[in-house]
Length: 112
Image (tube, rainbow, N blue to C red):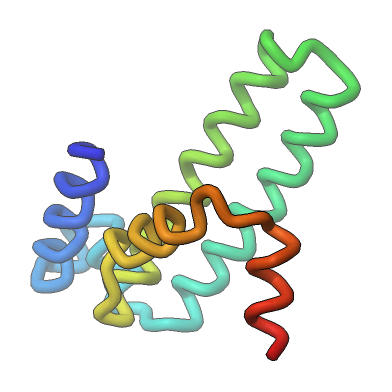
């Protein structure tokens, strides 16, 4: 949990950083569409890595690639949240609220 807080703080600081000095600052400077492109790209890479892990050794090289890609997706999702003035903490609180609730029940509740 501490890493989420540290990373969130760093991402917030990067909003004011020089885009030439920081990858994250360059994403913020490029705007929402560029950040969305990165989230989509990383999501696609997660899917490919998961397929590779499922057809190979999930605990070996393919599994390592999956973990790497999921980390990239989470990172870019956090960039998106911070860009839109939302907190990754909000996502964690929602997940905590859903804990112990059937996924089917939660989905039904959102449909009404």
